[in-house]
Length: 280
Image (cartoon, rainbow, N blue to C red; front, top):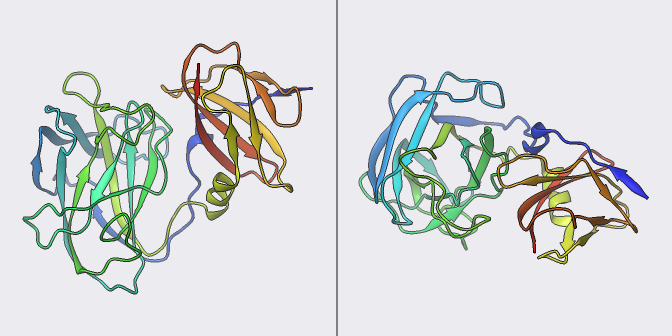
């Protein structure tokens, strides 16, 4: 049986729902960066939005250039001192536009405006829509292992835009000549804006083997029907329009070159999951 594959770059955008309660940190429309300090070899400036045709149509954004090799390059974004109790659940949302998948992290545990904090928290979703705007969300907490924010006051955000370890493929993706990153519409929300049904579907799907020689299988919950499977390269470009399904949820990618790819899986309920594979 042959399955026809449909492709849409907009399908890479995680669906959002309206969040109850939001605080705008900076949308850069005023032309000011809101930067408290920077470190490790990085330059930032407010520039015109490089892509107003997608999810983010605002006029301005923050441009990021890497000038040093340290993993911890950071920019400190000012937050009007915000009280957050240990019983509150808050989320940081930002629009991101990068040339490849970055390893993004944020430190929330600074004790004042001047300090950088110590614990790096990664996002709850991955950036997959390369060279397009995508919403990236972080849970605001003291450390990766914490379940809440217990320091009482959030003074600043120390954003590490290009750590280089937990992205696929691993490595730093920014430079000072032709690979820049963009961040916009930084907000603090009372709820997670990402679709809970998509995240549930994402966690219910597994792909194996990985790395792949010629074919891979998708394993889903018994009541889930896979309707569409799409393959993109690490630049975000489609690489095929038809994949042969020999058996239930088994797909042939023997015609692809060796490398890293993103597999987009859509079920019959319209939910979408993303999995990364390595083709040997």
